[in-house]
Image 1 (cartoon, rainbow, N blue to C red):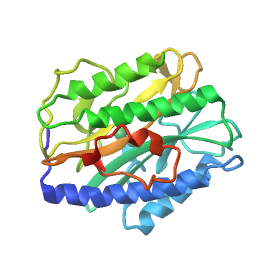
Image 2 (image 1 turned 90 degrees about the vertical axis):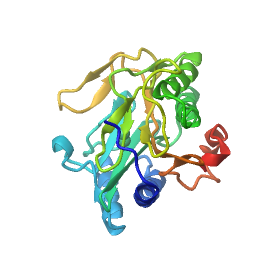
Image 3 (image 1 turned 45 degrees about the horizontal axis):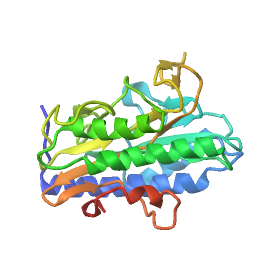
Amino acid sequence: MIALKSPREIEVMRRSGQVTADVLTELMQAVRPGISTAELDRMAEAGIRARGGIPTFKGYHGFSASICASVNDEVVHGIPGERVLRDGDLLSIDIGTTLDGYVSDSAVTVAVGSISSAARRLLEVTQECLMLGIAAMRVGGHVGDIGAAVQAHAEAHGYGVVRELVGHGVGREMHEEPQVPNYGSAGTGAELREGLVLAIEPMITQGSPRVSIQKDGWTVVTADGKLAAHFEHTIALTATGAKVLTLREFAERPEAQAYRLMPSATV
Ligand code: MG
Ligand code: MG
């Protein structure tokens, strides 16, 4: 069953999303060669708790940290640790906050130092996939519209779309119905209705979309060892359109380019 949210619930989720966005911004600013993923994780937990939130990931199905930190060929669910980031790495940070009983969920992939132009392109296109997915989130549409938009853009650039992991409804629980695949056909799947809150999260690969899981039981890596990127926002569908609840301050950032793809009602 899909739990639609009232305007009051969406307002609480917006506050949760603001904590997620602010802490993620801090982490993005801290990423540099020489920092460990464990340091970023400690920053994340401190930042969430300082704002009155609870790190949603910590303890989720036994996960030990407050963020997922996935490097290079790691797609998602990397466990923070003593790994030190190096110039040229790609780092995906996924973070969730529970505030006043409601979850927000967001992720970005960022460059560590200077990265190759091919890696830069993967980041840009994956973020554009997210924005096109958000733009497809309209009252009266269908969940398949989102996946179709994401898939078309990724595959037009020769990239792979991971099938095994999908976006999801979000609210009192991090993972609620419906599932939101990053592939599919427009006009199929559950209808998009006012009050629906989704985490849309394209996971895009440079090569084959096939993935496998590392021995730690969590870390998802590309089967061919090529790079992957992951961007995610929590978005509410309201009477006046889709609202991104985890929107970061972006005007001065290169990533602002991708935001041109969002309909103006979302900002
Ligand atoms: Mg997430
Ligand atoms: Mg998610």
